[in-house]
Image 1: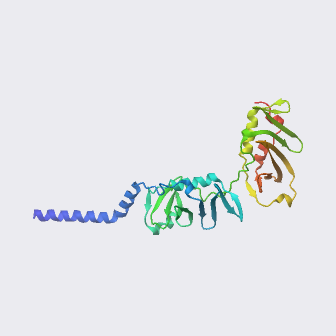
Image 2: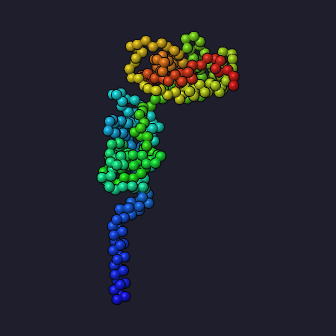
Image 3: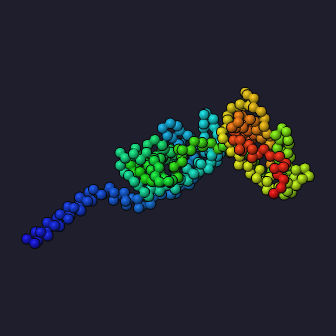
Length: 297
């Protein structure tokens, strides 16, 4: 009797264990998979990808590498791409690790936002599609690679499709502020000419603040546009000239002409670009200087 009871208890315990394993097997699989760190592209480098296609339900942006520079097509025109943003995407791709798998149920993909937003790229002779799903926490997203059922969590992609502008909006007026030896600022009413002699700056015979000149040159070097205009609207309308800036950099003369578009913007035409740049008033005001702005500490 005692032996029969013992066998019955053993049988019941075994059945309970089997039932438990049946119900939690998927969770156990995901748990052990999440503990296993697997870098998806361990032996690849950033330069291995020469084209990205950012695609969602409404639009597609194609970004491609040519002669070591990134470009994109927008409204039928080719522009330089913002290399910092492109490199952020590339670094995120090459840092991908499938270390937190959250689902293997393909019927659950749409709930996690998987399907509409994707990055398409070619690497090692193979095409890849990385699906970007809903946000997970502060800086992560649900991700899925190609046709795999696995959905995992990864960082670095939460702003890829919220970023509206991948063009390089930098004006690139000057490249090296230390190579600038002369500056002329002319607003039509007052003309200020600055000259570098040895390591000091002068306006005529007056020695001026080198630090303030450095600030001005930094503003000129880092000048960003609000937009890039492909048509030369200056030829089809009247836009008053508000400011001209002349710079000598590495013995090369450079010129920038500012024109009033409206109360919210200025047009900037520079010799080094076939485009017009739309400039915000705050940026314009930071460059509209006279001699008195460079005097004193």
